[in-house]
Length: 466
Image (cartoon, rainbow, N blue to C red; front, top):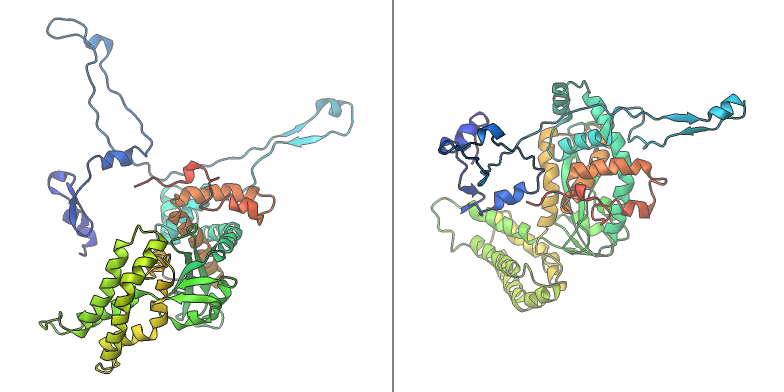
């Protein structure tokens, strides 16, 4: 349901301002009792106590002293808007008075001070993390952030904010490189790609499309989500990024992934199913759809997904055994049906395209039978690329390839942090406090202690559990 932006409060508000007893997801259900209080327990609590003064604790009936019998409590959520303050770092320098008096060479001792995240600028770890989180988590373009800072009494141009992000991306780049090394050690990965407009792409008009490639881990291993900006959709890009990777790669139907060497491509049944669904929806209104070939093709796909839902919590070994017993016969029947329907269907019709897709992708679509850790679809990739797609609707394009690469780096850190249950702002702030202090910013052991799945991270980096 789409709501008028200006009428949203009237449309969504409940009578008398009462909190609704149900919450709408895709259906209505009773709110779990006690869930709200559980969430509040994760927030800082400020207690305000109201009590009678000594001279007021007198019984109106007999004049005796009143004692505390019980308490009444109500909870309110208080919002503290974003605030800005100046942290002035004063570093003291010391000398020896005796050496000064006796005209001996005087040693100078300077108090230690943390290295800044961006020398020569006003940026702090928290401000740099805040700007990145606002843009890449909350999809706030820099011009809107510029206006927000102005309301706080700060005159910070969007160009300055852009410089903060570009410089911050340099600190994050070695961490992303280290995450890629861990990614390539896995034996099951997912990949996807989406468009990105880069205005000042050398040799390309401003309206042309560039691409953001996504690579991430699957069911096993630490959750890692990496983005890679490239000017084209050439299959050489995933081949280069995944150089050294051996194993299974979940993909969609794009043929460019065939250039990746030493991998077994695993197809996406969600794409196969979607094509039959589109063919079914395109049928004329009033026509019975339950007896159509499109409905039959959709039913085959639904049977496979139903089995997978039953196996959600199964071990890989159990999952593979059940697939061989139940899913494989469905696949055999589906293939025979596809071959029979191909000769009866117009190739260019939506149904013909759906049939051709499954037949052309057959080796990839049946690869999930080889290992119980594999998945039936590539939805894991699509979920991970969705935050970028949503953000792109707000900031529309990148200005330069350098900016697009910085965005890919920042997105990689933020989305991997989300996958590992971290608070993106707190995690970025921690990184910008720690990374400048490293003697060697590329030291693998030092970087491993800062990775999103590291047990060395402080609890403040953790996101509250919903």
